[in-house]
Structure formats: structure tokens, C-alpha cells
Amino acid sequence: MIVSLVYRVTRKLLAVPAMLLRRDTARDAELLVLRH
Image (tube, rainbow, N blue to C red; front, side, top):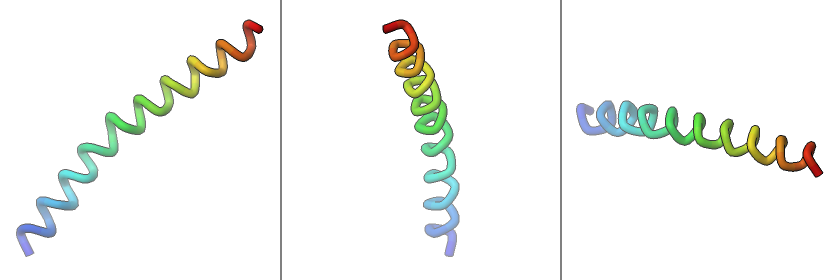
């Protein structure tokens, strides 16, 4: 049970930076598209 809890917490922690990176990348791509 503790293992599954640790697993869930780890996945949430890893999801946050991935989400932030995806948002920044999407914004950068949008800026590139708008420039051209």
C-alpha cells in the first residue's frame, strides 16, 4: 500500500514539470507561427 502511495506521489511530482514544459513549448511554437 505504501508503495502505491509513493508511486502516485512520484507521478504527480513528475507530471508538474512536464506540464510546465509542454505549456512553454506550446507558447514558443505559437510565437514562431505568429511571427512567420
